[in-house]
Amino acid sequence: MDDLTALRELRADAPEPGAERLAATRARLVAGTDRAANRRGFLSLGRPMVLAGAFGLVAALVLTFVQIDRTGGIGDTSPPKAARYASASEVFAQAALVAEARSTDASPRPDQWQYRKSLVRQPNDDSGAGDTTEEWIRYDGKQTAGYDDGRLRISDLPPDPGDDDLSPQRYAEKLRELPTDPDKLLAHVRGDRHWIDLPVEEGATGAREDPDARAFRVISVYLGQQAIMPPKLEAAMYRALGKIPGVGVEVDVEDAAGRKGLGVFREAGGLDTREYLILEPETFRYLGMRVLWLRDEMSGSSDLMFRAGSVYSTAELASGIVEKAGQRR
Image 1 (cartoon, rainbow, N blue to C red):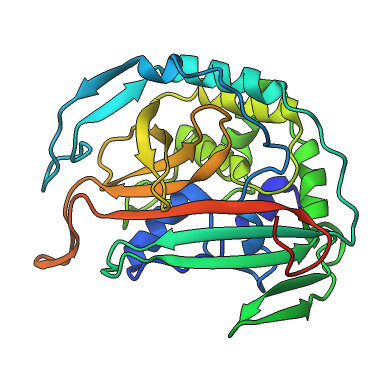
Image 2: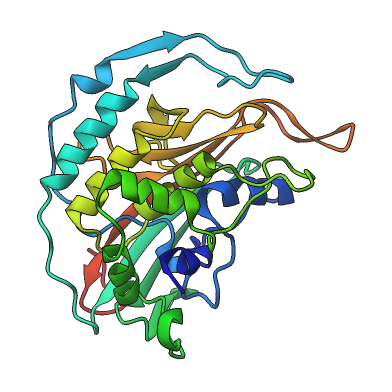
């Protein structure tokens, strides 16, 4: 099993929106919805541990934008508000330079723990509070931990044989096997037959996900991982994103915590939603994801499922390597 086969089963453990259609929408970005026995879900939407420190290199860059006034509604597939767009080529070029300048952290010990705190907001959640979770997993994948009714509970995980080992340690090894040349990386994520093929349209017969859509989705998943990522590989991912047709960057896209970042998206006709990979504007660290409904989505002919402007979003609030379960950074 190669790295993309492993990624099929990786997924954030955030609760899914209430509709099957939204689950399919999110799958296009994060590639699968199963937690796979609670082990795989921890790794899917975090951030590489090497992303640390501040880089004040793009303040002028994000001010280079065009503003387009658009309104959303039935039949309109534009964002339902005024949007500002940065130069995608400049953003990815700068992001690659910042990534290459990061230091390579020493590998964690097998008995250390990977910590993650995340927030999810559902489109039909009237409370506005969202759902916050905290999780720990041993770096060697032998145990997981989390709070239940205020009590920290640690659970043993049975070992996965051979290449089925999806511990943070093993996943970091799989990342190091990826090519660091942007063109080779792009060819890899476009053409790997083990990755999930998604229908272009719901109910379409024989229509499969096109290679550019797959490339954007796979790289988005990689950039959301918590496993340690080599700086050259991260830089190659940004440069590869810049080579995918239709990929753009919107300014001031909010994650579930209200933080404004650079929303990386791929423009494609006929979609009810736009899906964003949100990056911090200076460090280019992963902040979260956002799904925006561009037009009203109906169930059948008359039932409104999601109104244009509805939003599903996540936020990565904290992550890092700690010495024991229950410890926070």
